[in-house]
Image: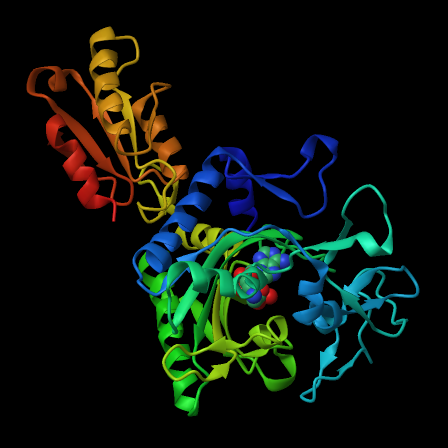
Length: 442
Ligand code: GAP
């Protein structure tokens, strides 16, 4: 993990937030390469789950919603974590992270010592609401309290009728959103794994009131497979590191009848990457108490049920980075570090080099290649140091192809294309480069 964090900082993927002021605990900023990787993940997701499906549409809602949303959704009452405080050193912890959780959902802290001062002197656990509070307008009064959304999901429920009326969708259909969510986590940590400000990609998939159990189970199964396919084919995670956890009765969120957590073997252990939940009609019933959905054909009134697949963006970035980080013997007594990123996710698709930076004719031809390719792909230019150093530098940030213009290129219009993963080189005609990259960047 330290190596990943250090590479991220060194190469501009992720920096500590507010660093020049001593940082802000567990806040992180995505740098020039990190934002590209993150955007590529979000675009791939949107493309797969919104553009390439007939039954899902997208929205982009406000972060601060009417506080009554959180009353109806149950978050004001239930979106809490058990907090314990050590009476000796006053450190605070999530009780369920350090205590013994019994099968009936109760927790006890007998025999548990404070991770900070090693004493066992606990104040009784309290429920702590994770929503970030703020005030709307200049007066900091109770009447003006509002919350930053703790999940993107509620906007899909609140906008359900508007989407229905404006898109002529009929059940079943889904609403998708990608955006920030905020949680005042008691114990954030592990780099970008658990932070207080993060991004989610969520879909609320609405369907008619189930008559048989199978009616919701088959939809649940569909989304389970879709999530697997996303991890395997889009993020190209090593699926041996992905595990499913059936969340037990007492441990599910207040709205869920069934939840599966998809866990991933992160460098710091097996932890939740994504979730899939059957939220029943809980949310729409609470938001649209007086105005249920009316079936156009039968006239029946009911509240549609929802299956919710949810993906953390930052955890996707971390899983992809952990999955791609590779160290290899370079055969010359050193080590080659490279990020084996799927080409579609890599920040730069290719790097273009003139063999020598001080030969104007090479630079000019390489520049033409660069200008030609950048119309289609996000590519970079490098003319510093020698070719070996440039390869090393591009490997470390996961650039799948390095293209070198040399003296032969001036004669035969071919360039050397070097593959990041195999380090193999081949000669490709300049006018075939676009086609070559397009075929490889899948
Ligand atoms: N709408 C359902 C929901 O929000 P969740 O399991 O609480 O469910 C969904 O969150 C996903 O959001 C998680 O699987 C994880 O990927 C991501 N996530 C949750 N809390 C996070 C945090 N503090 N930091 C980073 N990602 C987080």
